[in-house]
Image 1 (tube, rainbow, N blue to C red):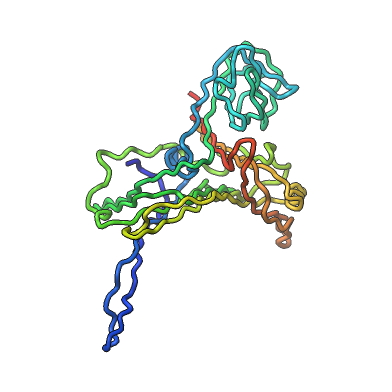
Image 2 (cartoon, helix red, strand yellow):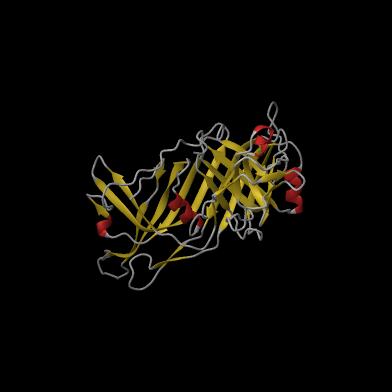
Length: 372
């Protein structure tokens, strides 16, 4: 087992019973018969690099694995301003594994060219050229050793099942929750707050042995990642809309997303609890509350125009997550609201993620370990 850093949990073994309907002359109830059992619930946590773990993140996205990390290092890479691209006559970026839509971390440019270092999203890629967005490149000749890194995961169709254990160590009591499939994953960024998240699961039925006086894991537990918790002050680089920062003055107060896998228990004769787990449609929605600055969001709402959202979390050493929702539509937006005197005009909207045909996904998570 691997330890989980968490705030609180709602894991539960649920039982369903049916009351006997036998008619008796003395009006008494004959019995209460156990007819169903299920396991569900989840936990809340503070977000840090490695929490949730890669395994849980893959389980939330129903994805098979993160992409193979890029390992590009060459002194034959230049940068061009005209088409905002990285170029090389000797590096085959396609063969190296660079994919359209993923984020890359660029390093190695020096002097005035150092403005090219940082994070950029791949707009297109061919053998010797990567056109990027989300960052403006300056012209730079080859010569310095340029390093390009990146690894990402997108939502998929691979179901992951976990055993989650609650340990009450002062009482030496252990509770196993088996066959847990992630049905919900969410995150919240709020001004002056720690970044928080939650995960919810639907599992198999409980059995008597799931309550025990010793751990269900063998050997010592693996320790949880110990990276510092992200906050929404210094650790959020920005929230991008269509790969661009929001207009000046449109400060975000609150940004949330909730991913729902619509998992359901499948019942069957001969099974106490769930015989299987049913697969449902992926739905992702969120909220964005901001100080009103212009009509960008309101106009997109009225015209039902596609857009994208991206936010980046980076801790002090440089460990980084980038969450991208490549195609979203604003679902509700009442427009600028005037709450009262001596209060700022705000705009509070809800949005929904949709399938993006360029990346064939609704959400993408890129991760970068701290530079060595």
